Amino acid sequence: MNQELVRIVENIARDKNIEIESIYRDLEEAMVSAVRKHYADLEGDIVVQIDRRSGEVSAFREGEAIDIRKLGRIPAQTAKQVMIQRIRADERESIYAEYSQRKGQIVSGTVVRYEGGTLIVNLGHSVEGFMPKTEQIMGQTHRPSERVRCVILDVKESSNQVKIILSRTHPDFIKGLFQTEVPEIGEEIIEIRALAREAGYRTKVAVASLDDRVDPVGACVGVRGSRIKNIVDELGGEKIDIVRWNESSQVLVANTLMPAKVSEIALCFELGRATVVVSEDQLSLAIGKHGQNVRLAARLTGWDIDILTPEEYNKGVDLLTTCLKQVEGAKDVYVDKLLALGIISVLDLEDVGVDPLINELSIEADIAELIVQAAVVAAKKLNDDSKLAKQEAVERAKQEAADRAAAAAATELNEDSNEATPESADQAESADGSSVAS
Image 1 (cartoon, rainbow, N blue to C red):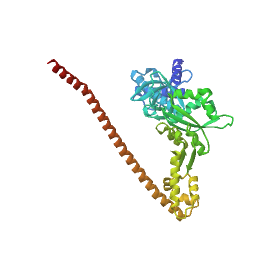
Image 2 (cartoon, one colour; image 1 turned 45 degrees about the vertical axis):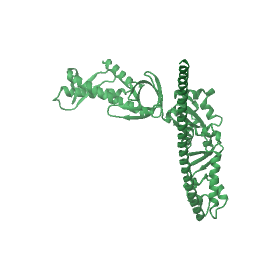
Image 3 (cartoon, rainbow, N blue to C red; image 1 turned 135 degrees about the horizontal axis):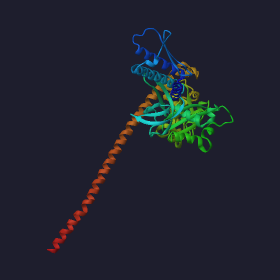
């Protein structure tokens, strides 16, 4: 009985997550290599069998038994090298098979070290994951032995290792955190319909409920914000906006731009553009810091969102109306039809072209051609006026800067003059005193 061998094989299988039968096959092949090394001139097939219960080893050459205990040191070293190589190969296959099936899942690991900006994370059982700098949240640093959660982004197999790519910036990481913190998402009562993220700064998540009795936004936020707070803390304070999903694009765009209040939305399906009108005091909220709010809203909804104030919107409509009035045969009702189509300016009309006017609005082809030509002329004039206004603004800014510099120079000269005046007065007083004394 060789129970020691059986115990060692079971320990290796458990520690390295390899099938026991695979290890026994590796050992048998390693011993075949050792026999061939010892009997260099031995011909014929060599078979080595290990009893899976007793651990007894039997070697045969064409049915004739071979005493494997007579092998020397060099064949033993050969068997050791072959066994190590085969077990490592089996371990790589096991790791690849396990983690390739877990792509997109959240895993927890321990920070080991940084290597050239790449974070090395121990995922357990001596398995290490790699988190490139591009997949790390900007501004976050991790210390060795710190527990960290991330998503398995990709699994790559190379000749000597399995490379598990981890990420904390991928949108799937946010989805995984919501599935962990919000049981209704895991139970598929609430569904994440869309997600847009700028890692480390802000994320917008659109959710919908498959049960009318469950409020999707309230469930994701949790009692007193407990659920969303856990996610925000995990992300290092990243802002998360939970948006109620709606099949209506107009309602969805309005929801995604919250907390800004939208006055009006015009959708142009031809251009894939949503023109949103907000009051002056809501403009900064709708755009967000560095345009972040509107940019994420556009990615979440799939619409190119253009935000205007009522004054800008009315100016564009007035110019469009004036342009149509100059076209012979154009009716006043065409303006309303164009607005209903989401075309609110001559620039939109130039981009859309003739076909939608004919197909969607049933405008006669010759009149549609004239309308588009007039829009092209008006758009060119508008662009020229805009360029001229920008040039004038630049020149005005330069002049203002020059005036400020001149004023600063004059102030500095005046201060220097005031500092010199007391000294001159002291000299005059001293001269007067000398004259009196004489």
